[in-house]
Length: 437
Picture 1 (tube, rainbow, N blue to C red):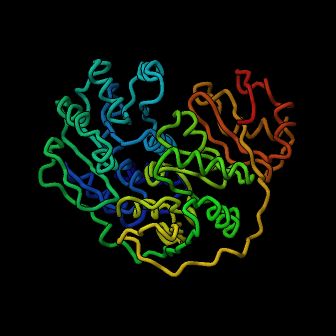
Picture 2: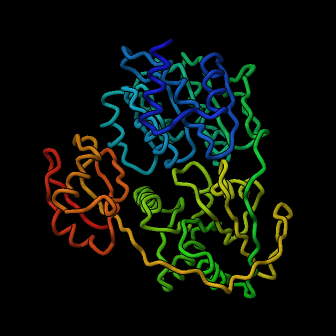
Picture 3: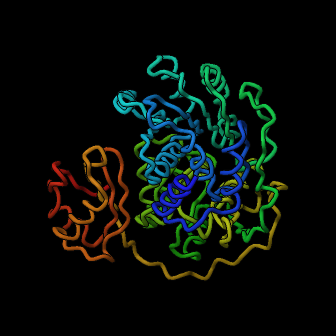
């Protein structure tokens, strides 16, 4: 027991977390004891850690096979959970596999099986069908954001996966939405429900209405952005065509941004999020894919450029700001002719004629062609930029280390000279290419 507590304290220290919140404490106690658990808690409350901590306690260090399976509705969520699990430094191998990347990459990573396998139902189903590994040691299945997986049409894949696991004896379901019907194939028997949605504190979210005099709302959007100033925020659209239109207008106005939608290649989606996280871009123009299941920091505001079609979309979009105890604003942008859905309470339209001070872009992102598999650490990268790049601490931005590459944010005004100095440098034993993206 003492060693278990010590391991948990070590993990929290690695994640820079002082203590677990009440939801995580309750989840840890319940999941350890129960065979079937449903965890309901708002976005941003730490559900990933809440199920990973008790999951680690079920693993056998002497078992070389996959022991736990985490199914997620999106690639971004798979990557996010993998990152959190690895940062915990448990000593267990963890891998994420998902559609949008070559199967060959999966095969290479699965040559040495992980204890925990994270993946989208479609890709996991492909590997199950090909019998690429034994399923006989999988005791635990986590269906993270299970309502979203059902919503986007993964029911058949999830049914097939669960039916192929002969030794399954522990099920954990998580969601930020209440009242979702759980299909019979999941096999939940008398689940213990941990519900922190009902205990949700009064939101500090403000909803403000912005009226466009024209049916084309792009100029009003630009005026609103100039009114807000360049703080991090998301502009939500309903369609990828709308994203392209908004992006084109912002580009012409020299408003730096990145885009994020299901129609983009996985690599481009991932890089958009990296640039948004590290401050290269202050704006993300996105579909509802960005409303949940992606790893981005707390935001001061979001904009509904196009009105959501259902209350669930409205709730999840708004959940990207005013999370936990923070304050935030959701701007609802609509033309005079547009009908506001009844779930959006009309507020008095705000005046956006006053402009905020707009600061020029400070950070940009460099790509480094080496990562974890080359035994490269964040410390190695920081050392290279400090010693050979002559950066000081204020000039070293966020470093994101991946399996086969890395990304670092640096000041825009010295980025080109850094590339000239450092491209083809050696990190550990690998000569790496470095360039701007």
